[in-house]
Length: 185
Image (cartoon, rainbow, N blue to C red):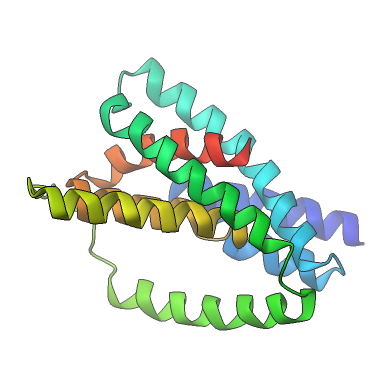
């Protein structure tokens, strides 16, 4: 029975993750519920994300939709945050991490419900060096988050790219796939 539940959860989380991001919000809690330690659940989710991100990236790249100018610089910043996040993940006791994941998921649910219209229209990004620096700092934090918790990495990356670089949801999805490949590796 656990195998069937894991398989069905993977299909559903993959579908959600590919279309909107946030598949880890589904798969990580289910893996913990099935008895995996939180750290292994997060790492397993990262591995699954690698396949999703690679297929999405290749599709977007074939249609020439990847913004490499933003993507490659962001990849370096997210990668550094990701490394620190993965290292920190194993320093936090499993029981503390499980409670932290539950609290964070409830807070994020409230945020997403209140901000459901972000990314519909293209925004003009700020030209300010200070704002650009904050943009990359936010991507560093998102990279940390992606390897520390995993769930919501794609969603947060998209929001950061939308709010800070003015990308649309589709544009941010293409760039996020590149970032997701980087941190999953």
